[in-house]
Length: 145
Image (cartoon, rainbow, N blue to C red; front, top):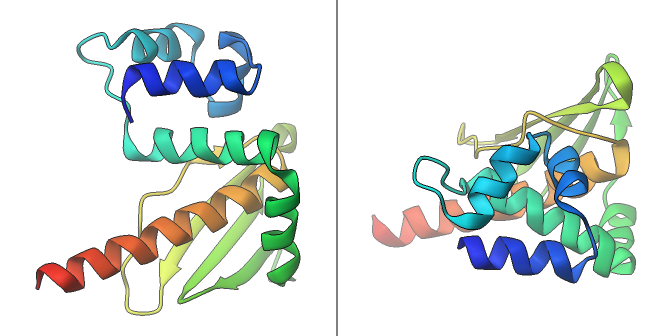
């Protein structure tokens, strides 16, 4: 994701810089520097995926709800667990209504995932997006082998 794309997506969904920073769990300065393309502030893969999750939640809630309703989340020892394709996702409640996310592939591959999300709906959507990205990563690695 390029700095211009981050700025465009933020404006497209009508979020202020402060709202985007809060949704990503970053400081306003950091998000602003990423939007301006300041050296030393690259847009990491996990940040790009988080932005896409926010955009999906804002622009296409029906698609997210469709994905979420297709996945069964089970209570597993004080955390939620779901099978998303060949991945297992775990969501654990944290302080201030946040949820931490962990993703694991059945063969041991673990894609990058966000440290936490601000609410349960965002955590579920983010887990789905990161699992989908993990599936693409595995397919890409298999094609290169």
